[in-house]
Length: 436
Length: 183
Image 1 (cartoon, rainbow over the protein chains, first blue to last red):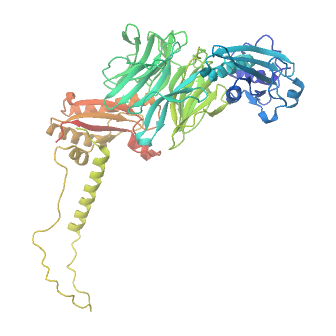
Image 2 (cartoon, rainbow over the protein chains, first blue to last red; image 1 turned 180 degrees about the horizontal axis):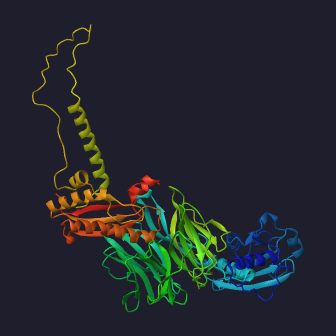
Image 3 (cartoon, chains in turn brown, blue; image 1 turned 90 degrees about the vertical axis):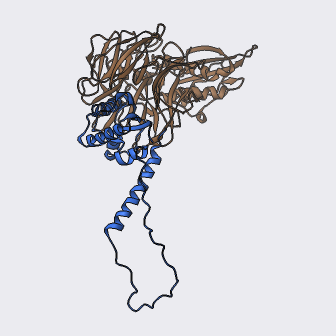
């Protein structure tokens, strides 16, 4: 009867969404029905400081922070731990950990190798059965210690939930400062947990809607100046930036194809916005829509064959799907209200969107055929969802009335809603794929 | 030349204040003040006011950016999620076109703006529609299209930082900005 509650929680979520239950690792027992009244009970987990050569305490804190923020785990206060300095080579005293109701335990050891590289060994234990669920070793440069902690977090999350992790990833977003009528907007990048924030642009012009490539450490984004708009490719590793062509009017809403070889975007001409696509190798452009309505916010299906987009061709902004050659556009949003900013999930099973209805803004998800719409959030202004690489968590931005925007996360059940771990004002988040 | 909206706005206020003071002075002539009943006559100073005084009038230099902003009006407003030119906007745009036809060296950029009750990408597209609706109107009134560029700020540059319907209705606008050629 190990990890019953966490597994039950995850599978209950999956059932609520009508998706197939996640693939549970073979060692897991069958799941009992311990969830009552639909409340997700997070799984109690202990992550004591790793032993060995430095940073062991910080590594444990990063892991605990990741697991706690996911909402699927409850990390136990280190003050309650029955033993410390757990030797990685020796089994923990499971009875003592049972008494504080820890259901899972992560311990580890940090070694600096002869060549100066950092090695971290860790184990994940089922406290009630005494079974070792994971025993892994990561080696990297000492500067990469946080990434090692994120990799361990991903391994634990995947073993316990059956879903891939999303912790070894980054967020590009727009950091905002200044008054509402003259905001300064800078592109920033940070780790998924808010660490290592760093500015990519200097705030001398407005930046909007950064989007990650799913195949490289590259983003595309839009800049807006009094002289006009531009879309860029920006390589985060090399800081190399290039402009994507010259356009007759406004150009905006760029987004990569899943293979990273193309970018779809909107171009406005004479007041009418249509969706175009550019081959990044040949720079050849072709027009995908030619409708008098606004066509914007294109987002590819993970196999690249289809594009979901936003159009008001039917009278109000709604979501449509077409082939990635522009063929066969049809409306998928049917719930009433205004739908914008569609984003296809990396796992392909959902499309996230912003919805306006009754004076409120919502983040929601629906199936690619428009069925099974679920509203996850409600506020004065929620906008611009982006998917975590595992397709189970969304980040978006929320603005209170008259306030500054902040980054938030919500899971696809809508139950785990919380501010993202960035203290400043931010908007337009874009979640990276998992790092290598 | 570049054009500073805030400074022009302040100037407009000063001029408006001056105009209202002048209006008060001309419409409400007061009788000469005389000595009150029972008050003693003051001592003589020997001062003689110079003849020919009176107020100094000021106005925007004709053909200047200030002239356009104050005497014509540089903003027109739109209904919710609409880019139709309203009837109250037509008189402003007619005046803009007449002014622009009088000063043919002037180049303008029409900027479309949206309220915050929409999402960013859609609002960029909507702002572009508004800018182009203003541009098309001015062209129909004889302004050469080569003198007009357009830009959408989406919801990025509200003129009113408030959050009620009054603020939103001001932030749904087309803004005619003089970018060159004013006197």
